[in-house]
Image (tube, rainbow, N blue to C red; front, side, top):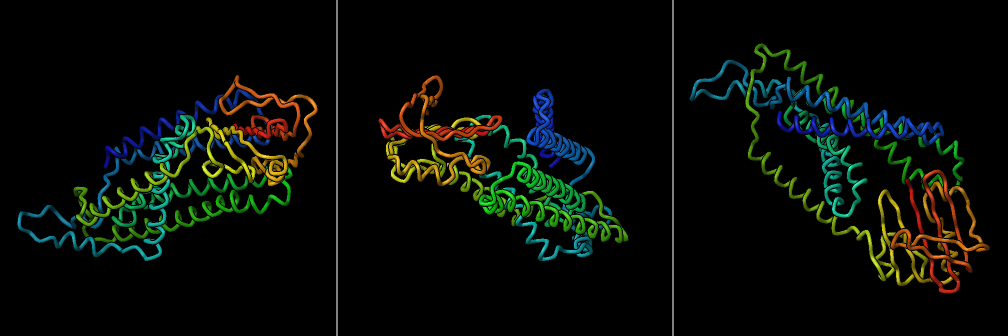
Length: 390
């Protein structure tokens, strides 16, 4: 277990260094807009979180003896043939977790292992930037799942306390993200018609994660206090012991590993390829005009999407009016316009392969490093779309 914690500590340290390096461009840009301040605060928060995780992992690996409370002997080492009365005495002296704590622990462990499985399945199609970005949170997922198991099911007080701290950190970050997102929504003047969509897809999940993490963290903190009180009340404190796995735990572990592998495999198969040509609209990983055919697309780094398809003007107009792009671009209320001067679009094959449309319609929105463009060519009945978010 100490080796595992040391490895996780090294990964967390690398994530901390990566967050510090990533902070440099933000500081050098001197961007004091709402988005710039948000990015700066997020970077500082990431450095603080992973710095704390790094210190905790190294400290627990080098100083704390992680061992199951239910297997700690109550007295001096037994001679061969002695009964296990000492171990049972300590086991019976320690309280057992409530059903609510067990249920919350299962949810916390399952949620973090599910995220790990999805990340493992998505590696096959994600670009390097996205892979590295998500890898930063992998040590956090592993640490929460591991410590939650040790704290609840093995009744290790220090693990329960550590789980509480980690969940408090997650809840704090989610709360910070919720508050800043609400503030940015108010400052940017997001259209009222888009508020329900923001609540369902952005604000609601943030608030749920924040509240759930803080409540689960509080439950773990109280549980750790209860375990420590029970151990301190013993006449003979628990002594050193080996970290052992029961047959039941090994079977459950194998089942969990198999489930994670199955989930990762299923998710990998469900993902569309990042590049495709001359496919049906149903095979594309995004929305298209209703009668779109002969679709060609490319999904690039950091959410970049470029595609083209054959359609008619009526379907194109309805598709644009259905609010394409992001919530941010939709709230801008940019109208569809007639092309007066030739409009140049980068094709799905990438720059410098471009298309110039002189007769048709265009939609164009941009802000800082985000942009959404859509063009319809009347001469060819071909629609072109490009979006980038970073």
